[in-house]
Image (tube, rainbow, N blue to C red; front, side):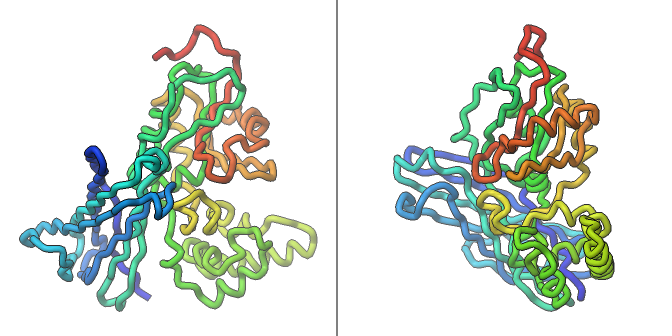
Length: 365
């Protein structure tokens, strides 16, 4: 089956506020990566959702969608005209959301989530695509950018998303007085989310193979659902996953565990099924991050601290996907065994680990 070659990604956003209302304007780019195929976009809808408040605390919310096609005259109405996106071309869409809340709810808004439903129509047939991303809200995060004297310090951030640059986020929340010997860790899921490595479960078309294979996994596994398993099949291929499943089952009968995950590809261990991540990503399947090693090296060089990408759970398991300094592996594992960042909605994707007592030899402000 031919898949749609269209790709959607947010590019930038602006925030405007008045005495009683807030308005976000977000620019979204849609690209056609195919060399020949032309694809039509018959409809484009946005459902905004404010995360952190109830419906009773929301006074009003209005959405305006404006296509900014490079080869068409700007429309002066709210009607979405079916648009043909030619091969190797792109177009822009402006999404404006204005809302008003009760005064008691202003500081409770964690972020604005844009749930996008849009049509793809072409040689492959027609279907509805689902995409979503966070418009960041920095105003409810207050940080003095200084560290405390604890050995392990979780760092709270705003809800992260595609509009955030991973290295800039580390730079924004890193305490200014930390030492070059300190270690800054980031969870693999928050990093993957900033890289756009998550999939709305409504986009997953489940096969019979996925329905059968998922039944062989523990109920708490992210591969124990048909959509979770189908996500891995789409990445690694059905042949590799089936062979890994068969070999893994044989090895398990001989009490050799974990063979499936070794054979099925890196994402087999890293996929997080829905509900595995804090809202609004609780309805998305989050993949493992891309180029974790390269990220650690670049971030460490720019921030002048040690950096690691980690996967930690409440069972005391700590997996280090990558780090700029592998001499710190045991230190990181000991520090994160208690899962100080948590797996709920603590919003602490970063953890600072100190190897030395605070001294006057700091990075300064």
